[in-house]
Image (tube, rainbow, N blue to C red; front, side):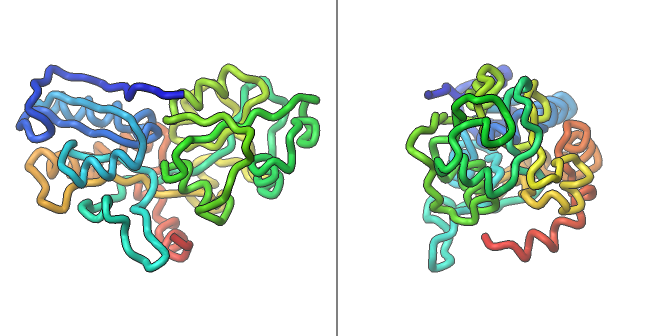
Length: 286
């Protein structure tokens, strides 16, 4: 399924990312839904910019920011690193600036009676070892597993890294693939037999059920303390070729009290709330 990237369009001309009064942020759909929609609109109202916010995924966010096609990229994964420890050539031209924290969660339809899943069970569901909800305490129905098509997407890459512990983890052949987060979430809302992995910053705003994992519910306190272990940073990507004044201004806004308040109020974990996670994150494999 292909989704045209949605956009919040202000009054804009066609001069591209560098027009002085237009500000264009593109990338991670989870970041878009969770905090950026409110943040870019409040920033633009306060500082007199015309906002444009569009999705498309973390990879696009990083790489278009590197090219200077957009002012800022949004991403919920770090830059791709090869086996030699080098950054992917298409992602070397950006600086990633952390603005908050998210967590990967397992989502199902609201009417699904299952409330908890073990990590080992999750791996079996996504690899094909478990195929019926009956094996998880649910109805005697086939499990419809939904994934992001791109294994290097924010959810695709980080779920393999953090949950499946293998960035090349292969999902079973009978999965339903989606080009972006929004249609994946919408199909979990529609299908009572669906399961998927999502970012909690987006999922908690939707009529979905979020499962406990190994008996731990991904509430804000559990994520911020590291008790729920599948946390991940939220970044903004900016070109290494120099930050324009409007980019500097937006970064100052989002990292300042007002921006951090928005991130927290919209359900993500801001930098202060997640202060215990920095040391834990530094010890994790990338």
